[in-house]
Image (cartoon, rainbow, N blue to C red; front, side, top):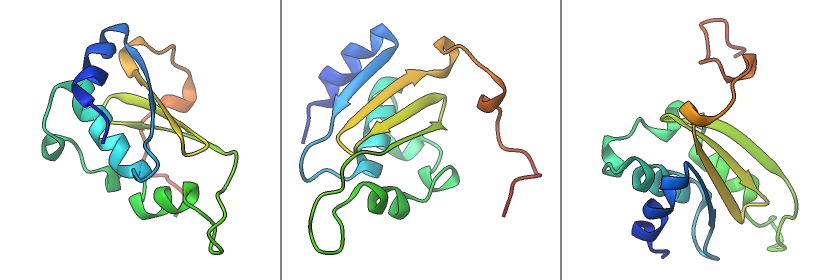
Length: 115
């Protein structure tokens, strides 16, 4: 497990990069990273499942059914005031929303979401 206190100290830069451990799930890393940056307990954060399906997130970047690693891929989403980008299931970049230039794609989901 990585030292999230050191991760939180780096948050002063407002953009933080983190390398996931080999046995660390992407969904767990997202919650831990946001918790560390925000200085809050993980259970006090909005549920990750309100934003993205944690199982699907882990599966997307997890190994294939035959055990071979997946390569490539990038996913970005907003979670609890942070813009999260996951690259290749190995790197997580977190940027506080207040510091990120915004465009129309950063809006909160509306009631007109596709189901």
